[in-house]
Image (cartoon, rainbow, N blue to C red):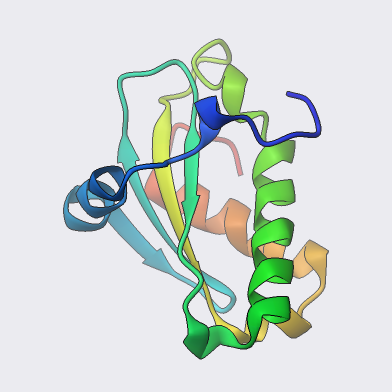
Amino acid sequence: MSQRFPTSVRLRVRSEFTSVQERGRRVSLRYLTLLAMPNSLDRDRLGIIASRRMGNAVARNRAKRMLRDIFRRQEPDTAAARGLRPLDLVIIPRRELVAASVAAVEQDFRIALHRVDRSRPQ
């Protein structure tokens, strides 16, 4: 996947977000809450919900950039080719994420992904 965040790996419509929130599995950790639901595509897709409670616009955008970068490194567009079940993911970052290191947030993301779907490596 390129450095860009293409539309093919994004959740874009409100109905996609709400279906993951209503029917997906939820895992809450220190820096984020991850909701996941299998999809019928050949790739993972990501949606991020960063509310104003998290902080100002700078903090919210920094958190979203960090989460997109971590997601990008998981190679979402090759999930099915690697024998993994493709998922629609919704991430809700917590306030603590802004002050956390990228390594700590990435570890939380990997742990949450592992708890959601056992067929994915940790």
